[in-house]
Length: 399
Image 1 (spheres, helix red, strand yellow):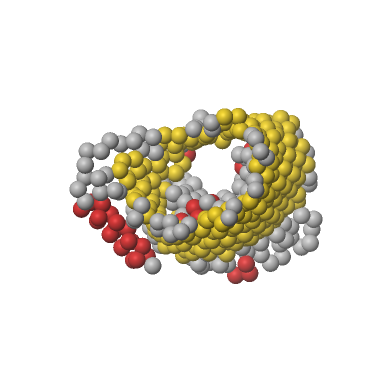
Image 2 (image 1 turned 90 degrees about the vertical axis):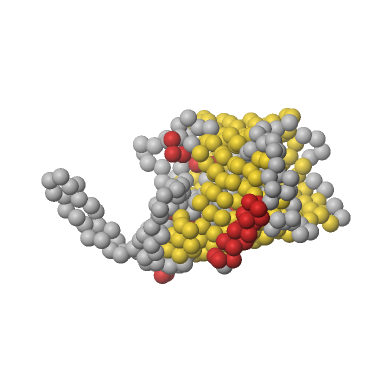
């Protein structure tokens, strides 16, 4: 599969190089979004320490600027760049750029994506998202702007917190992705990433990588498909994805005691290798202003006893009221298995919202969210919980 994917990319690149270029003008396009939320939050539960207070009014802002220049040659190929800048002055310098990749596409060839971008499986599932209203989603970690999300159930890009999953929770690692042209609404994509970052899943370096590093994730393959079609006033969308990779075993390393001139190192416990996987499905149906949909996803850690396995599902419905308003209700339910002797970590959230279009690229949200997190305990002890009620509003700009 790896060879086939690389060959497909090589053929497309060869055609692009061989075809004569022309003096076409670049389209120096750009855009982005700027969402500002103000909400009152009431946070309680046994997981809130006596010294902590999360209640009251808070502000959460999510914003990015996207630079998307492109050029179409006489041979019909379009070359493009997508660089997404986090418009957040509190980010560390290494976090200022989010996704950054090149695209090569045409109507007959499809699209090749080269660079730091999510997988074909993730993008396929993201194209058929659970219906919901507003820019603060509960099928993600966005509500952490108003309440603490504790426990292992909230690992980024994993099923316990979102149906938008990746193998081993890798995110935006350098990869090669190919999407076919649409065939009567059906689009299929496949991805290959040589490795995932060994610590956070966000490998960005352009230097040599040790693919056999202990604990590392390598040879990440993903496949995804989506189908969108309309039948007699009914809009149908379906999506599915599967991905797998190889995790290198971590041998035990003894502690090195501190000596003058050397701080020493802590002991490292042995960790098993394995072949972690993820899969998911999603569907939406729209008719007469109503849209309903659901998703389901799993992450398999491939660890004995199932420790680290995750699953989650979402369900939502919206109604586009004649005029500027849309209303919606959705939920997400996820769980993380801690292994033998420890109860599961869990996440559940419910959102009721309404959004009003104020003009081109401008909308106003109002919403109410109830969310609860549960940290598993050992030996039948009471689980630790945090619950929150969030009442908020937002102005969303898309440009």
